[in-house]
Amino acid sequence: MTIDTTPVLPRREPELLGQTVVVIGGSSGIGLETARRARSEGAEVILTGRDPDRLVAPARRVDALGTAAFDATDPAALAGFFDSLAAPIDHVMVTAGDPPGVARAAVGKVRAAGSLVFTGGTGHRRPRRGEGVISKVSAASPMLIANLALELAPVRVNLVAPGFVDTRWSASLLGDALEARRAELRATLPIGRVVGPADVASLAVHLMVNTAITGTTVDIDGGQRLVE
Image (cartoon, rainbow, N blue to C red; front, side):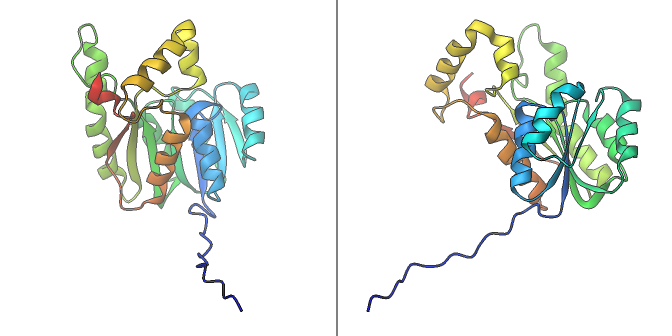
């Protein structure tokens, strides 16, 4: 008689089961991929964006709990959205709008064990001619996130900082130069490939799940900041 000695691994419980994730700027790219990833971990998701028509198909793809269309840079619209939520939420992923504005609007709506995850960038942290204002804003982002983490505790606040991410938005910016940029990055990045929305989404969901992380800025650029 042959005895099967293959170990039986326990089934992993979804890490966001029973939780609700709001994605500000969730109609495409990093926001939509984060919603999909959170959904795969058992979360209910609410997608927001400027254009209600552009939210229809993405919401269907992730079986969203709901959608809302508004301008995330408009403080009144942002406050109105959070005030309209019927129940507390657990996490907010922000790919549009400014961190202080979202933080103010979300106060009292995010459960104590929850988090705010913002997106920034690594591209302007080094001094460059002609980018003084942009560089100052980017350089200040980690300190802003750290301060928000203290002010909003026990709600956690973190920032994911991508370099180039291969999204539809990137394609619209680069146009015919997109393929050349992809080839350049494949040849120069230490990871040997281009960063995609799924990479950033994976990190964002990890920051939601890991309750020991707050006040951090995490670069996710495939090593782009090391070689450019």
